[in-house]
Amino acid sequence: MAGILAALVLLSLVPCRAEAVSTSATAAILMDADSGRVLYEQSADREMLIASTTKILTALVALREGNLSDVVTVSRHAAYTEGSSMYLKEGEELTLETLLYGLMLCSGNDAAVAIAEHISGSEEKFAELMNETAAELGMTHSSFANPNGLDAEEHYSTARDMAILACAAMENATLARIVSTKSVTIGGRTMTNHNKLLSYVDGCVGLKTGYTMAAGRTLVSCAERNGQRLVAVTLQDGNDWADHEALYEYGFSTYPAKALAVLGQEVDLAAVQGGTQPTVSLVAAESFSWPTAAGETVETRIELNGTLTAPLSAGTVVGEAVFTLNGAEIGRVELLCGEHVAPQVASALGILKHLG
Image 1 (tube, helix red, strand yellow):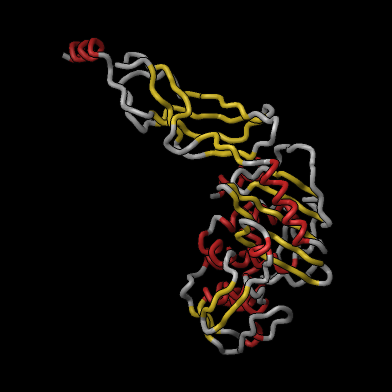
Image 2 (cartoon, rainbow, N blue to C red):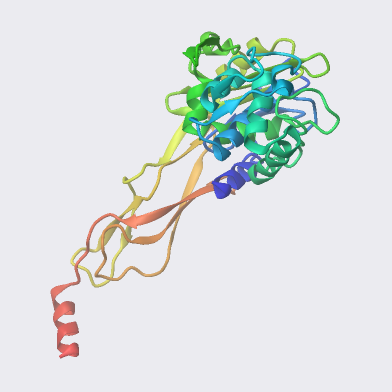
């Protein structure tokens, strides 16, 4: 996971075409979730308040450190937390799963504190875990002081860092399920998601809204169409619903993902020495796609580990396919022998004679 996230940070620096979309946000970004390519950005590295979008990280840490079936007892401190709430009561017992729904759908600040106290004993200790996780993900311009996003001097992030977080969050199947839920009844509570994009935008699958007077409206979202996932982030944006919709229309139409390698399918052929056939198919060990605009061409270079000499076994790693755009490497995929290649009969008899 760390290697994939590091690649996302690196690939997000690959330049994109001239922008044909804009937003009302102070800071914004549109990122292809699978490749990490940035399709649009505006002051994406400006450190800003992020309000309740903080809870994406809170949920990710909770899922890593706890179990959905954990029973959490709500403290007085948690029950009386200010701001948005799922209306917890002191002494109430709920599962961690119920609290996570309250955290992500109702944006419960009380749920955030209850989760933090359950996982780490206090908000302060939980914030340490949040900052460790943020550093691991490559969020280099972020600092977290609490689990709910209430304004604090040492609590901030950037549009780029929040996009990196969103990409990681959507890789967690449980978190992806929760944030894509429009309404749920669990633990005796019926909760409705504050994220209107789930109904307004074609293919929206999450993530999280946020607001404080100082932060303004903040929004992190993810949408999927034709197997391609995009993540959008806007900070301090009074027109965020419309801006996210416009960003997705621009991204999906201008940068459709192009499959450059498909798991198990042939990428190229390579010469074989001393075999019963002159070539062997090279198949992809994994799938790889890249968002490509009109006029852009991705080039593929085959790098073999050495001369291929029979016998060869199907499934053996023999090299890599390296993909470049405008001379910059954007990814690589291991290549496997697609079939067995036996040695030529004469060569085989020679080997047996030599051994005899």
